[in-house]
Amino acid sequence: MTVGWGLEVARRLREAGAQVTVTRTHSAHHGRQAATEGAGRGNIVVAVGGDGTVGSLAGAVVAAGGTLGLVPVGRGNDFARQLGIPNDLAAVADLLLTGSVRSVDVIDVRGQIVVGSVYAGIDSLTSALVNRVHRLPARLQYPIAAVWAIATQRATEYRIVIDGVTQSIDAHTVIVANSGFYGSGMHVAPSAQLDDGLLDIVIFSAAGRLRLLKALRRVYSGTHLQLAEVTVRKGRVVAIDAAGAVAAYADGDRIGPLPVGVRVRPGALNVIAPPSRIS
Image 1: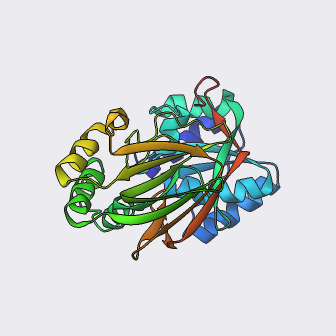
Image 2 (image 1 turned 45 degrees about the horizontal axis):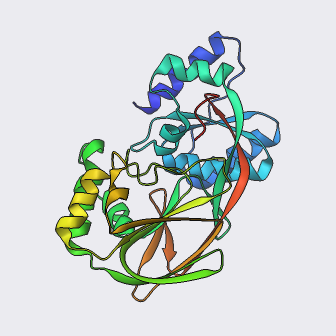
């Protein structure tokens, strides 16, 4: 899928009688500005891109009380996957015309809206590496970066506070998930639901590299939760800190160094989605 896909969707929407304005953005700030203006006029804002684009525009849509549509043309498209957005040009256009508007949860981290997940540890190192390996095919970028991160990253002592309850644990990574998917199709939080008002906190505790590689192989199917090193908690407000210098990332983009605090904002985002696929 390419950005040209978005232009073709726009053409199909116009042929169906919809009024469509295509805005080519040259920066994240420009995209948010265009989304704010469009949502403020009562228009549906359609994000043509991947999870980073969706997250960036979602914040503006939430602030304006608007509605977001998706044309998934990015590397990961994990939020679209969770929503059940079809991987077909005609079906995407039809969904934008006839789909249901659903209210879904988002994550608020330092005032920034995140639709998928916030994470630190091996996963944040993996995201940093993915952002440097654009020459690799998209489907290989995350797996290769993840293997490299596992080979180089050591466990760190984390202090995790979930709804006021503190846990200290040696871990390789901590993921606070709103959506169940990340990393181009990894089903890291299979029980995550977009409309339950809760976040899933997935913790990969200290383990040998072979065990981590086993978890990596199983995370696409969600069966990594069967491993003793992986635990899941649920909560609404989460704070993460680490003994060492660890950065937090959200949907592939750097947030900044730990500590970081996040909270769920239930039903804050209106999004066009298949009626039976909010989960």
